[in-house]
Length: 341
Image (cartoon, rainbow, N blue to C red; front, top):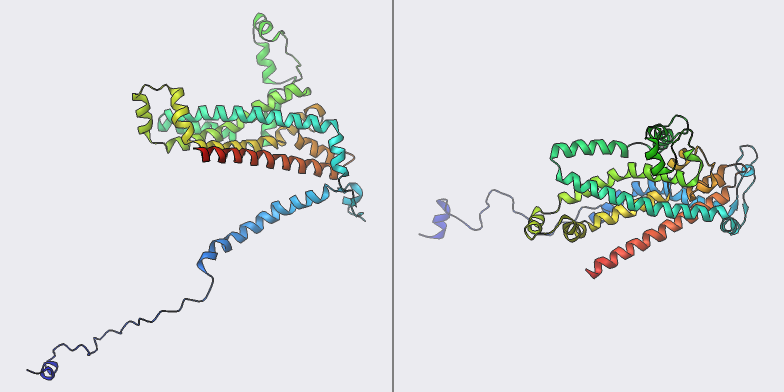
């Protein structure tokens, strides 16, 4: 039987069409358009534009104003005068002002104490939450986060009312103590009319308590989230080896949560260095100069009569530079410790 007869009877033929279009093996041309690797950068453009409009442009303006003389003649609605260029004169006057150095001391001292206490209390509460049941932990988290959600101005109003000289709960509670106990603890028995917000020391004592009350919940919840990612087998092994809770924390928990603590420390430093609303509300305005920090001092220079916006902008630039230096130093030390490990 020949091949021709097989083909006539319906036999297979390699050259016969199969009924389906053949796939072309030629390389297809790529669709014209944007390269996929550039798409993420394009998507970032709207966000960067908003950040530039809301943050970058005002920062540049503040930097420019810090070298100028800007007051009422320059900001009035009718026939404003052009700003006079002063060079470094605003910075020179700021550094020669004694209030600047006391404000810098208050800013740094407060930040060191507040950041330390916030991280310590927040970490302790986060570890405690990790030991509670899910229902009880959720209940406590909702309770403490309510304090964190209070706006800064409302925080100042609440704590100023608590320590009010005439109607404050603190003075009322201290007057309830027995005289012998109050004398032994504080050296006095009558607390009626105690002006807590008239002196720098007591103002910052209240401010530290206020910031601690409102800031530790964020640290506690962040630490709790980090603890949930640590394998329980590590703690079980430490318990079998007879490790104490304190040693377990420093040998297991702290090393594994170092990235979390690094971020929390940087955020706390930034937040506590530039505290303004709470301190301003607590003092009822820039009234007690001895209690100024750099933020309140900048506001007072810029807007308190006679307004000197150039000096206020110079103080704001100095505060920004200090924050950048402190943050860069901390990040560098953190990276060095990571490299050594």
